[in-house]
Length: 122
Image (cartoon, rainbow, N blue to C red):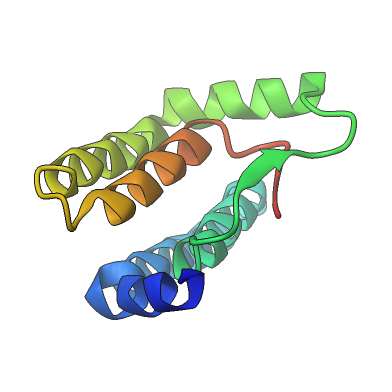
């Protein structure tokens, strides 16, 4: 069931979401200051490719003070808009019964995109 959900997710927009994360991550990696943010965008892009059966969880010894500071910078720089988009798509998909599983995946991605530092994919 997870495989079918992931294939449908990929075909119906997951690939586009992942490509957007990867392209913006590459643009962020142009500068040395943007590299940590680009790495987080690559992580979110990988998660967006195959979200069913996976989750973003706190890494070992997290949240640490560095990840908290980086998450604060992440939010202040406007990356919370990613979470708002995922929340909006999740609400839109949950209108129909058929779209609920995909809407729930958007909710999981919204939560992960608010505080990406210190998270790992399992």
